[in-house]
Amino acid sequence: MRISLIHSTEKNLKTGEIYWVNLDPSLGDEIKKRRPVVILNPGHVKNLRLAIVVPITGWNSLWDHNPFFAVLEPSSVNGLKKRSVVDCFQIRAISHNRFSDKIGDISADDLGQIKKAVALILDIDSEDCL
Image (cartoon, rainbow, N blue to C red; front, side):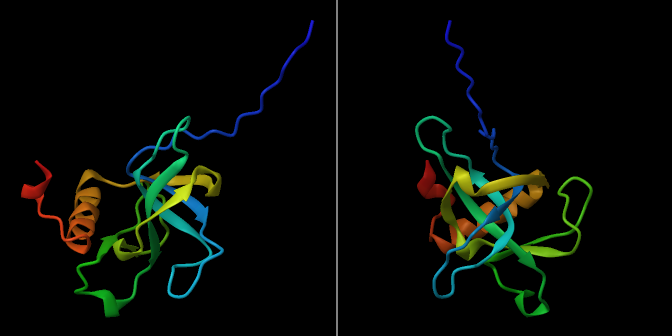
């Protein structure tokens, strides 16, 4: 009798979750290093092991009126320790292999702000999405 043990590190990623990921290697102005990201689309664990994410970085008052940033206040739900922003201009697809620990979840309102910023960046009008 042959016993096969399968070690699975599969994560059940979901839209609106915040995870730690390693974004290196990166080039030029791409956001770098290990940092939190918000999942916009988790992909598919069997067919497309890529997730579309936007990175989170520390708050800077220079970004106060930048429409490409969505502010996240720290909370017990999102797991963030300081005021942060989602840099929606740095949207990217990353491998599921880059994900490590889950930090938390964002609210529906925060997800809505992120989607608005991404739509602005991609020049998408909600009327075009029908």
